[in-house]
Length: 415
Image 1 (cartoon, one colour):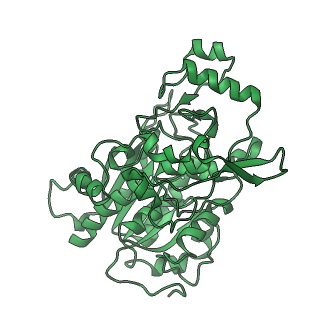
Image 2 (cartoon, rainbow, N blue to C red; image 1 turned 60 degrees about the vertical axis):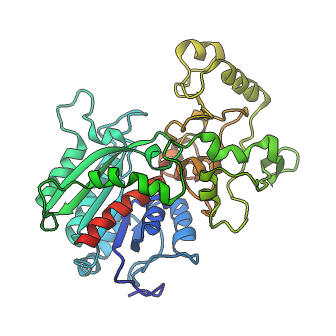
Image 3 (cartoon, one colour; image 1 turned 135 degrees about the vertical axis):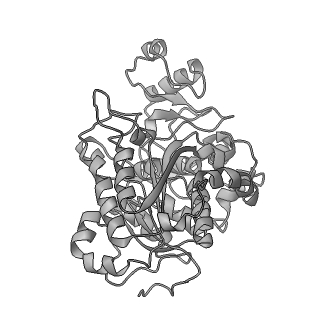
């Protein structure tokens, strides 16, 4: 098998497809699952994944020797390693992942013809070959909505029908990450499929298990049952209390970063985020280089905008911007859904956009998780590259992933 570690037969084994930087795998690891391999095509996202989940002391992957530990597409793996994939049949308990969702997103320009929408078909091909007991699929709410001016049914129902033909009972619902300790009102479409022969009861529903275990999950993390506030997640990362330090570029005009200083007074959420960091400062604290005019514009937005509510047309006219999605964070509520565009959200009390680390905190990535790659990209490269802001914006929140992993683990243990 692997040169990485010996397999633990008592743990459910999973494959992570479209793994991104590793939010889903991190949560599944914390829920007691053992990884077989993961597939991610972007080199920057895979570099983050590899650094945190394969190369370090907490690795939980029993990576097969026949598969290079490098970025790849599902199509590549299907074409080059079909024989080896067939040999995994009966030895993988879960296939998890979320096909790229940009074409389905209700937040952007929905595009029925976006080629990324078809990637879920490769996901189905992998399911057909490996035939796991369980399937976990996460996507944006738009995955379950019909396209405007189209008679076609939602793509989620196309996927559901194909899984049913492969012998699965398919369950789906919407889950808000804020209900599971994530300081973000991020509602996602979740699909869980179970091999029919594993279902013994007519009233079987994994989403009932998720709902019933919410309280115990939060208590196990020593988190409050209420929603976590943004200020509880990133309040220790203020420039005003930490100061600035040199990051990169020229001393005079280069990038600065938050000069992190550990605080003694920690919220229950911050204790979870700092756990395992061994006192080290988190990475990805680089600040954007805002022009003076931009800072003044941000101050004006913070003055006239109701926190947590996007600018309306009148406010945009006052500011002199056509940008639709600018919102000032509300310090006393969970964040709005993070996107891959860092300038969609402004800090609640400092005239700036968030750092990658602040976004990671809002996504529930612990400080020990080190994010790699360049920070941003633009132009034509935006749809082809996955820099740090994009990695975090696209990720499944690890706390939500852990809660889902615990639910499926209960099903696995019963089987």
